Each structure stands twice: as C-alpha cells, then as structure tokens.
Image (cartoon, rainbow, N blue to C red; front, side, top):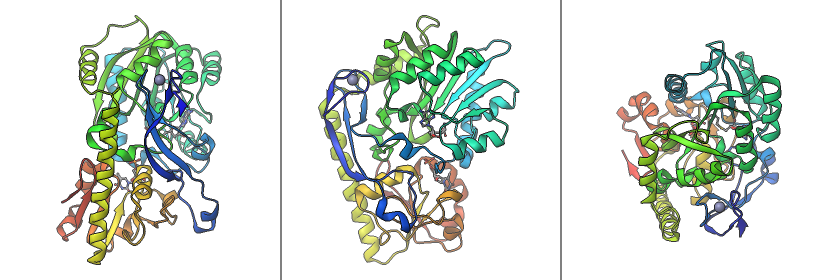
Amino acid sequence: MISCRICETYIAPFMSFGKMPIANGFLTPDTYDSEYFFELAVGYCSNCQMVQLIEQPDRTKMFHDQYAYYSSISKRMREHFQKMVADIFARYPVSDNPFIVEIGSNDGILLQNIAQKNMHHLGVEPSKNVAQVAQDKGIQTINEFFDRHVAQNIASKHGQADIIFAANVMCHIPDIHSVVSGIKYLLKPKGIFVFEDPYLPDIIDKISYDQIYDEHVFYFSLTSLSHIFNLYDLEIIHVIPQDVHGGSMRYVVAQKNAYRLSEALVHQKQIEDQKKLNHASTFEQLRQNINGSKLQLMALLNDLQKQTKRVIGYGATSKSTTVINYCGINSHHIEFISDTTPIKQGKFTPGGHIPVRPYQAFSNNYPDYALLFAWNHKAEIMANEDAFSNSGGKWIVYVPSIQIF
Ligand code: SAH
Ligand code: TMP
Ligand code: ZN
C-alpha cells in the first residue's frame, strides 16, 4: 500500500509487471552486474481516480546527461508540435510581447517554433544532453527539474508567462503538487497552460500496457486531473484528443473563471463517466487483458523461433522495455532491434539485453518478421517501408491486438 500522490488515500496495486529496469537505460555488457531493477506495479485511487505507479525510481536514475530519448527523431512529432503551436496561437491570442515557457523541452522540438518567431521563451529541461541540443539551436533552456521553486525563480527573472507548454512530461513528475502550484504562480491571470500526455481510457481500450514504465508515474484522465487543478484554483477549460503516442489528450488549463468551459470538455467528461474509472472491475479486466496479450505474443514468438524464422524488433522504444521484460522476450526470439537514435546503437536493451543496431542492419538484410515496438509511429514507418513488405517481410503488432500483416 502507498498513499495517493494527489489526495493521500491508501491505494493497493491492481497489477505488477515484476522486476523492471530503467526503460531508457540502454547499456553495455560491462555494466550488466550493476543494472538497477525495481518493482513495476500500478494502482488506482478510489477517491480521486488517479492511476499511478506504486514505486517510482529516483528521478536522477532516469533523467541525466545520457538521456536516450531525443524528441526530434520523429518527423511526425516535429509536425505535431509545429501544428500544436499554430493551433494554440490561433485560438488563444497572446499579448504583444508574450513570454512562453515549456516544461520538459527536450531537444527543442516544440520551442523551436516559438524561437523562430523571435518570441521571449524559456525551456526547462533536466536532461543535460538533450537540453544542450536545444541550446545549440539557439533555444533558451535552463537545465533544471521544474517545480514550485524553479517557477518562482523564472517569474522573478522573466515575469509571468502567457503560455506554459508541457508535452509528455506532466505524467513523469511524482511531486505533482509542487508542479501545479508552480504553474499557478507562473501563469498570468489570463495565461493558459497547455499540456498533453497518454490518456488512460486509450490505454485501457487498446491494452497498450507498454505505456506503463518507470518514467510514467501517472496515467491521467480528465476526472483525475480536474481533482488536482481544483486544489490550486485552476481549471481545465478545453480538451482535444490526439492520436500521437498511441492516444493522448491535450488539456488547456487556466486560472479558475478566467475562460468559459468548452463544449468538447463537457462532452469528454460524459464519455469518461461511462468508463467506470473508479471501479475495481475495470482494472481487473485490464489486468486479464494484459496477461492475455502477453500469452498470445509469446505463443507467436515461440512458434516463429521453432520455425527458425528471422525476427527483429523495430524501434528500441522506452515502451518496449516493459514488453520485453514482462513477456520474457530475449535474443533467441528477436535477433536485434533496429533504431535510428545514435545513443542507443551498439548498446543492449534494459533487462532483456537484446542488441540495438542502426537502421541499416535491418534495411541491408531484411528479416522474415519485424516486431513493431514503435507501434505509435506506425503510419510514419509504414510510409517508409514498402520495400520490406514487397520483399515478403511481415509486420507483427501487439496493440490493440496481436496481428501479423
Ligand atoms: N516534451 C518532449 C519530451 C518528452 S520526454 C516530447 O513530448 O517529445 C520527457 C522529458 O521531460 C525529458 O526530456 C525529461 O528530461 C524531462 N523531465 C523529466 N522530469 C522533469 C521535470 N521535473 N521538469 C522538467 N522536465 C522534466
Ligand atoms: P517513442 O515511441 O518513445 O517515440 O520512441 C520511438 C523510438 O523508435 C525512438 O528510439 C526512435 C525509433 N524510431 C526508429 O528507429 N525509426 C523510425 O522510423 C521512428 C519513427 C522511430
Ligand atoms: Zn487520490
């Protein structure tokens, strides 16, 4: 049992995935002996409905000067953030000389669209290597973990913000009280806070259990988020479902009573109310579905191994760490994983120790099957991989169900 990070109600896990390593902890054999493991388990709060990890590793084990996720690797995500910035500026006009802040700005994938407009901006990014990439592009970035204290420092140096952005980072920060209180302090009276994260109902519907890993301490819904914002006199004023990262939600938050609530928000709340996100049966069903997905995937991989088919993994994603370790996939099932990120190449996957090789290892010698770990980038990848399919190569996906195509 732990107490809920939002409301301190006791919560018990509904599911454990067993011992897990750091999802982005790609490593070399000389460090296998000191590899860190923790128990990956999730629970939900019967009071505020927040789904959360029971235990999260210390943040310095995940976010440091060798962080393996470079956001700009994906063309689709570069386009996504370009459009996000354009859409937000079109819907919410800002003052003449606005100040824009981003939490978790990584290599500058979003803020580059603001810097191009010569707008006053600041990124907050604790992982030094990716922050450096942004700084090299001329994007103002401080190398810190955002919290209430950092928010106060930013406000005293730069003034309050017109817009605060945060993509795929709110769900990473366990002390959400400090973050939300910092946002409250930093935001102008008519300012907006725009963030997006994987959406709990999508995870449940698609059985995309690989969204559950060390970095993701929270699995948000509109209902659970409304609870925490309300405590700080903030409110969600608008939501827009997104199809990136396998199903995300964009939330627009403002000071209470500063804006009218959108119809989309009211509609989404109605949808959520039917989802029974505070029922034990919902999570028991999810647990069974996850177990079923694992059994089916392993039956397939064991069968292909018996047939001596060549199978490789496509995309050494952070999400794949949960699948590989929970299902027990090893280098007998898949020869290697192809990935375009230089820092991952030549290393081995966390826990499962499957080699990660450059993309050419795949394209120069097509396997019989490619297991699509980067399933959330399926459209982008399929558009590039006609030659593999034309050569007779087959794809395996496991979200929303096990399929070969
Ligand atoms: N926004 C980018 C990056 C998401 S990955 C995108 O959507 O692609 C999560 C990022 O949040 C990492 O770069 C990590 O270093 C950063 N991060 C983790 N904890 C943080 C904190 N407390 N404050 C600010 N950034 C944080
Ligand atoms: P993500 O699912 O967390 O966004 O990570 C995607 C990973 O997949 C990242 O390591 C880069 C890799 N990748 C490829 O190797 N090829 C591709 O075409 C794409 C889109 C991603
Ligand atoms: Zn709670």
